[in-house]
Image (cartoon, rainbow, N blue to C red; front, top):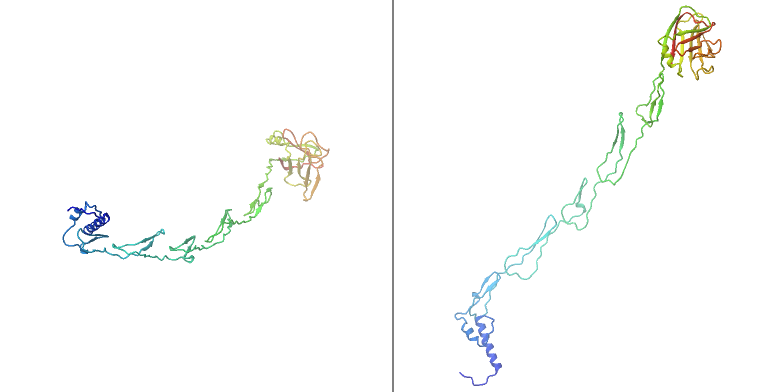
Length: 362
């Protein structure tokens, strides 16, 4: 059919829009169509019974509408679900975990919360045992503290055994003590250093239990040695002069000669039995320089039968050959270089017959 009448283009565009809307209403598409595409789109419109809501299918959150003519609006609801409430847990390391287990379905918008009440702790929950403080698990909203038992630092005690062992003992009670140093002392009974000179009686050098602050020494003992001999006179010797008591040929002479110049040299002789006239006992000691009449002196002792003692000071004792000292001296002794020993006899004091002991000491 020919159109030989002018048509308003805006009216014609409106017709085409109405046809496109009708196509889309039938096929359910949202496509746009040109006038040339419209015939094919119309031909593709499905025929048959109209579709409804019952034709819609649901799978999970998806609603599927099969192709076809829906004469009326169709709808289908997905499954619904209640919003899950989270649960809260905390592990031993303090990690807090919130868990919400949600069932499948459409959940309406909303807010749900879960809570976990922690065990509230304070200082009173802390416990102390010895050096250990235990804080139980739980929530401490503020700092908590407790103290272990305290102790005073004990001072050591000192004891000394009879064997001299010093023992320091520190007895400490349990508890916390501040840094400290304590000491104890014990004064031992002391004795200063000294030198003990040996004598005839026993001496205590260091008393038991005493601590010496210096050396305790024992002085050297002078070893007096010498020779002793006997000689016997068958008759009195009353002639003034020297009498040889030990000859140079005697085995003792060599020893005496070796010590004749010792400063400690001394000579003693005495009669072993007293007699009515004189039992002479005599000691001569060398003092100072040999040969000086003032330095070589001794003392004479004589006894008689009555037991009385007459003591006469010796003016001179010659312990070396050469000088006879003061003329008429009594009881002088002379030790010669060959070791022989001579006794000076004065007529007023004869050597009576009998046995004598003669000792030379150095």
